[in-house]
Image (cartoon, rainbow, N blue to C red):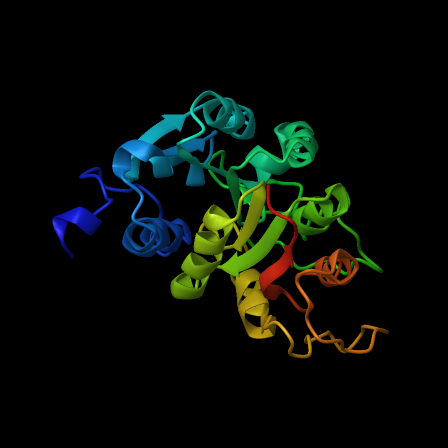
Length: 274
């Protein structure tokens, strides 16, 4: 790797071995930033609090490790003050979708030109395994899967992708950390999109998730390709349709498919740019 394309700092990541954050970091520093040719002084990565929020320290651009749940607000402010910057907000499912959830619909309706990357590992990992808004099981660690029909979680699972579609985000994609090259392509398209972009990254927590959680997700992943039939779970009453990322109604149908039945990977929706 040439010096010009090396966007890593010398700080060593402290994530657990096998954490999906390594894939996201590599996607950003080895593919996205070099491919887009963004100068270090014209890129800003803002994070909140959580495992994924350590990323600004590992990327050789401007970075701001902010307050829990406030990364989107600070990212918006930075973009409004310095519109020439490429601004990316990174946080976890707890950071963005719990304490910070109130900021997201307003970022969407303002359509500020920033990219929001949510690292969804289905748990509060940094604070040792508490359930998050996306946790599909009751207990941490060895807790079993729950049937949403017969044994629902204590609190209903929230779906950030459906939420983003329903609030009208202008670019929505979902990637998986076990396919970093595909994830990088999604992030690249999100950054290039002129408007608010949301990318949900499905990733394992090796420490607190039950091992079969992410195994199930990986086995059931379905890649989206424009103009090709979408894959649907066997339980779906819908008939497969041709994927059209410009159709927000079809995007909402895709987003509402339970992630443990058929997680759709790719660009779900691409709307009008600024």
